[in-house]
Image 1 (cartoon, one colour):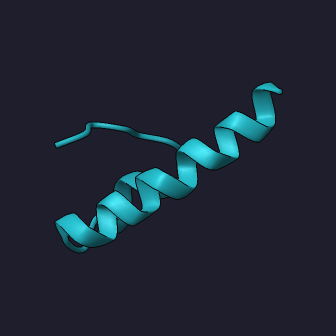
Image 2 (spheres, helix red, strand yellow):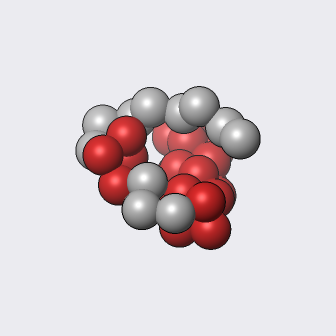
Length: 35
């Protein structure tokens, strides 16, 4: 499992599926930030 901590994401890992969805959203947002 990923161990990604970014702002409020750490406190919102309700389940693995929910966590994976937030990780995907985080990766997308980071991709936009670093473009």
